[in-house]
Image 1 (cartoon, rainbow, N blue to C red):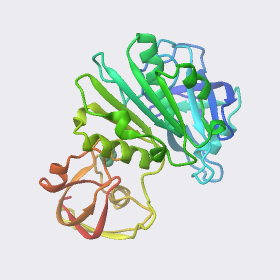
Image 2 (cartoon, rainbow, N blue to C red):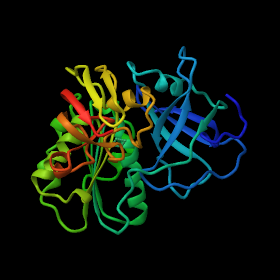
Image 3 (cartoon, protein in one colour):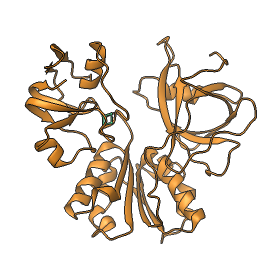
Image 4 (cartoon, rainbow, N blue to C red):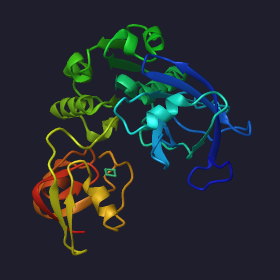
Length: 327
Ligand code: FES
């Protein structure tokens, strides 16, 4: 990889240390290659890094939450789960050794803590602990109240288990769920009725996020008090079928394979749609539906936006049958 200044990957980092946290998760400590200070970030922020999966011959991007204190400018701490059936990015990251170089973008935060002092309910499943622990560490230092609910398959598979347990039983509850975080947590009890100054933050696999969002809706939590970050793939899901999407203004018909998002099919057809998170969390990619029935899978749009404004997030949502978009 070139070490010349790079607009897309402005940070030139060197791996200072790697430590296995579990059989699947490895912690990496990264420093600036020139030994200087690294750009600041806030709790919940992530770092996009440039990975080169073996055998693909091309670079790709992966994002990892930053865990260390936001006041420590000398290094970044990330933790990477090895995805046995992934596209090779996590394998690339796990193969890094001290002294290896890594290009990265500037830290970015799509999952920030609410600015005003508040009580935080922190919920994490598996490797979703990384931004949540960053928040817990920040809240702990700031003396702000929080409760952490953290699920993993088994104690041995739980990264940062000792640190979470050391918060004490009044502030941290650990769950061992044998693979189904949403089943292990009493979410109705954890969330309870909404109250002014109470915010919930959840990060983990989709079933956990879905369960937290639906429990929060059932208790009428205001949407602005529910914050989420999804880990893992958003598409495809089991049973997904290819679909046909007609872009009315562009005069293009897309045949979208089951394993591809409508957004990617639009980009592949030479269009330049707006998007950001690609996880159904920001709403930037929303397109208006002129005809057809979308299968909504986003967390960004309200029911009114789905049903009255007829918007859909094309990065994650799919179509039941043929769809016509105002695009
Ligand atoms: S790009 Fe963020 S919701 Fe689609």
